[in-house]
Every structure is written in structure tokens, then in C-alpha cells.
Length: 348
Image (cartoon, rainbow, N blue to C red; front, top):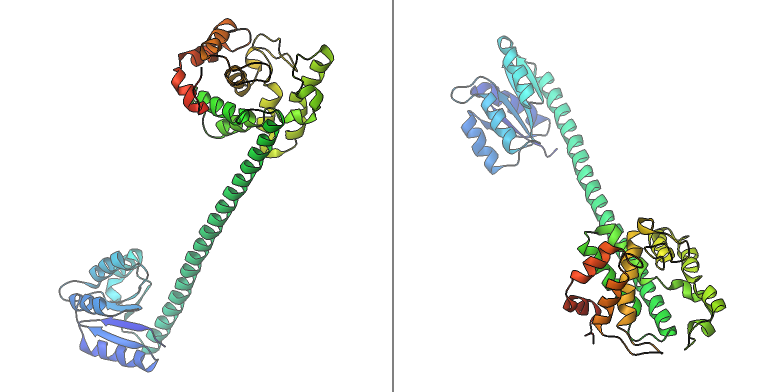
């Protein structure tokens, strides 16, 4: 056995008796005649169990117990008391003593009690160490899951960005129309106090708003002139096509709702459902305005980019009909320079 026991008693005979008996059992025994001496030893040696008399000259065993538990909650403590002082013994139990023995005591009873206390202490320490190990493993696994989720999230975003760039390239967009409108939309949403998950859903919906154009033929999508009525019927299907593609993907259901509604108008004359006012998701109302901003300030096959003042005129003209009036007012209150910073370019 490697356990070390500190015996604290003002009677030398009891110290020697306990030390001899426990030493024969294989324990390493240290002794002190008073509390101050006990703390000197405790400061120099690792001790697994303290056996202390309660009534001693100077500081009592109760004070030893109280002070020792303040610095070492795990150390075992066995108190020795006389039959006339049982109330104090019970107080010691409440203060954290593991057990007590009464004088006069039998050596066999002391040895058995010490053995049981040290076995319990060993089990308790093993349980505590296991708990610490388990908590560390849980933290480690949680961190691994977090890293994996971040990697998956990054992979999703990278895949979506690559897809959107391919779509923009198909329409021969200069730069990335989809990324610009995403920047515009999240910037304006931030001004409206939209945060966290809702902002993330808006960003994805804005980035993927034209995903449904996968289902539109090049003859219609890339036609340099105006579309005829039949071609417009096909073109106006792209919000529903986009919604059908994304709504089955759990983490893209929110963006799918924005995609379905991004061509609705505030007065109910948009498509595909002729939603009106606040029936239109807030993300789609924000998007509808910033999409106009990007469309008008970007070069098109049939015209050059228009000046920023043309955009403000358009927003003022269609405030309350095409555009949510509150969102229109917010747009008009934001300095041109801030929109240019979002776009990463200067407007005319």
C-alpha cells in the first residue's frame, strides 16, 4: 500500500499505538501532537487520510477539519472523540469528516474503518477522474463536431457560390450580380435590425434567387431583344422552378421562400402568386428593391449602366406600388457612397 496517514493527537501513547498498528497494515504513518504541527506536515507531504482527536490543547480537531476542508476537499478525515462528546462528533460529520471513532477504541475497529475509508476514497477519486476524463472527451468531441459543422457549412457555401457564379456566367453577367445583390440585401437587412439565422437565410435566398433559371432555355434567357408573351410565360416560371429545387433541401427551405417571392410587387401585381404588402416575406421585399438597384447600375446587352440618380428616381416613382414604402424610404436615406462600398464599384 502507498497511502499516507497523518495521526494528530496530543497523547503520545495514542499516536504510537495507531502508528504501529496501521504501519503493520502497510500504511505510511506520520504523526503530529497538535494542529499547527499537522499543517506543517501537510505542507510538506501528500496525505491521503487524517486521523485527528477532537479535543486537544490549543486549536481543536474541529478547527483542523474546518481549515483543512477549505484547502483540500478530497482528503479523508477520521475523527476520534470521547463518548461524552457525541454532539461535536456529529458536527464534524456535517463539516465534512468521513467518519468518527469513539474512545476507548479497538485497534481492529480502527484498521477496518481506515481500510474502508481509503477504499471509498480511491473509488471516489477514480469516479472523479473518470468524470473529468468524460467531460474532457465530451468537450473534445463537441469541438470536433463544431469544426466538422463549420467545414460542412463552408463547403455548402462554397458549393452554392460556385453554382451561382456558373449561373451568372451563363447570363454573361459582368462581375457577380448574385453576390452584389446578396451584399446589398444583407446590408439593408442589417439596417432593419435583421440578425442571426434570419439574416443568413436572406443572404442565401438573395444569392440563389435566380437558381430557377436553370430550367429556362438559352433561347429565352439570352435573347438580346424583348421577350414575346409566350417567352415571358416561360421566364416567369423561374421563381417556382427555383423553389421546387431548393424547398426539398432542409437547410434551404427559408431561402426557397424568398426565391419563390422575389418577383412579387407590393401592390399585388407581381408573380407568381400576386402576393400583396406584408404577405410578401420581408426578405423578398428587401430583395426586390436591391435587385432593381443592381439591374439599373450594371451593364446589360441592350444598354449601358444607368446613373445612380436614375435608381433613386425609380424608387421614388414606384414607392408603394412595386416597392414596400418603408423599405424604399430606408433605401433613399442611405448615402450613395455606402451602396458603392457594398457593390465594390463606383456608380455613374
